Length: 372
Image 1 (cartoon, helix red, strand yellow):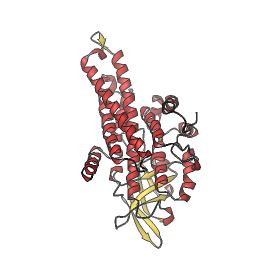
Image 2 (tube, one colour):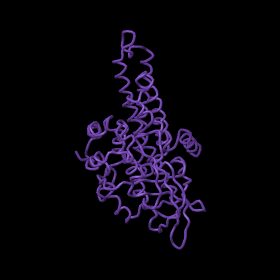
Image 3 (cartoon, rainbow, N blue to C red):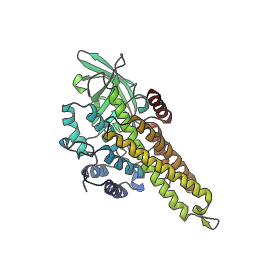
Image 4 (tube, rainbow, N blue to C red):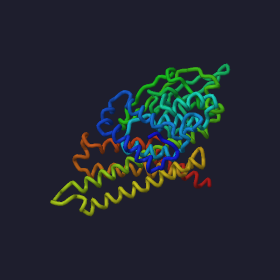
C-alpha cells in the first residue's frame, strides 16, 4: 500500500511493520553487517515504491505532502527492526536541507529524485560529529566569484552511496554556508563504527571549486539552517531509539515468561518484575518525548529545540538503559553473537552521540532556560 496523507498513523505503523518484518528480518540485517554498501538495494526499492522517501515532500515535487509526524512513525519502525537503510540520511538530512534552504532550481532538480528513491543524499556537518555543527571542519575560501572548499568532515552518514553531497563550510570570518557538492569530487572512506547496521564516512575535500549557485540559501547565512538540520536529525534518532527500546522491552518480557529457573519462570521474581517495569517506564517516556519532538516541526520549520533536546535525553539515554537491562536479563544467551540484543545495544550507543550527546543537549536546554 503506497503511503498517502489520509492513512491513519496506526494503519501506517502496521503497514511499515509488516514490510520490515519480511524485508528487514534479523537474518537479513546480519547478512549486511559486513557488506560494503551497508543496505539492501531490494528493500530500498520496496521502500521507495511505497512512497516512504517522499512522505514529507510536497506533492509538487513528487512527494505525498505529509509531515514529519508520519515520517517519525516510519523511523520508529526502522529502529524497531534495526534496519540498515539510507532513509535517515536521505530524507531527514538531504531532503531537509533542500526544503529549508534549497533554491527553486535545486529543489526542482533533486526533490523529485530523492522522493522517488532514484537518488540518495548525505549531509556533512563537521569534522567531529553533528554535535559540533556550529564549527564545520571544511573551510570555504572565495576566489574569483567561486569558492574553494578544503577540509574534513567525519561521521557523515551514508556518504559512500550518496548521489548528492551537501557540505557545511565556514569562511575565515566564521560565516557558515551549505554547498551542494558532486560526491566524485570528494575523497570518501567508510569509518568503522560500533553500530554495524550503519555506515559512517570520512569526507575530505582538497580545494575543490564550487560556484555561488551551488550554495543552499545565502552564502554565509547557513547558521540557522544547520541548527534546524541538527534538530531534525536528533528528533529522527529519538524516534529510532524509541522503536528499538519498545522492541527490546517486548523481547525481554517474552523471555521472562518462558525462561524457567528454580522451577518457575524468572518473570515471577520480584527483582525481574521491577527491572521490566523500569524498561516499560523508559519506553513510554521515550514514546511521549519522541512524539512531542516530531510534532514541533508542524509549528516551527526548524522544530522546537527544547522538545528535541528533551527527546534526545529521554529516548537515547533511555534506550541505553533498556538495552543494557535487556542484555543482562537474557543472561548468558544475551551476551552471545547469535542473540539480537547486541544489535540494539550498539545502535543505542551510536544514537546517543550522533546528533549531540547527553552533555550537549543538557547544556542547550539550560541555556534556553536561562535565556528565557
